[in-house]
Image (cartoon, rainbow, N blue to C red; front, side, top):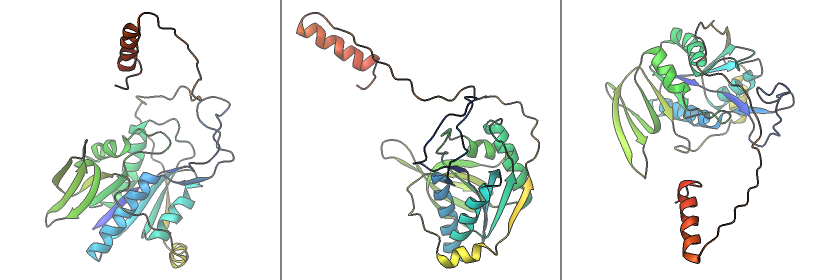
Length: 255
């Protein structure tokens, strides 16, 4: 089975974040980057599938500037067989559909049996790229996957629903799955894996031109604005209690 894992490089979680001068995004001058954690679980699922099958190939794909190659090398060190770097210096002008289109153009020549992505990204958290990529490629997809089991004709997957419910779905190949975080224990790159990663193929391809007009544009990034507001409630104890309940229910929405 040939498996492609689409990963994203994001700022480290404890990195000090500052808004860029134009207010459009964060200042990335002094940031350290790492693999998007939900994508790390997608990679782990792909590696375990290959190990259980005893054969196959895992290919990691990442779009971004030259610095994303460090994240691709990390994925190779953990056990991926090949890597594809989609060279794109600035992705901030693309929405989810634009990102999905450049990923699709890089993935199509590989003709994979299965494509895995994380459920969402740590920076934007939209949770859309995987399903839009599946639509662009015109293949079936399933989301919030906890477990993947190959069958004779396709896959059987376990989806996490709400309130402790799960759904078991059988689906054909090729297909795309977005993997839920926490389903597996993430592995570390071994010293041998790091050495092997230096000899594995890391191919760079140019990002394809996308003609899609962005449906969503990012106008402004800003820190949460602090506000203080005091409101005095008057009346009898019973009336004040009723007013508090109404505010908790309809304004704060915690009950």
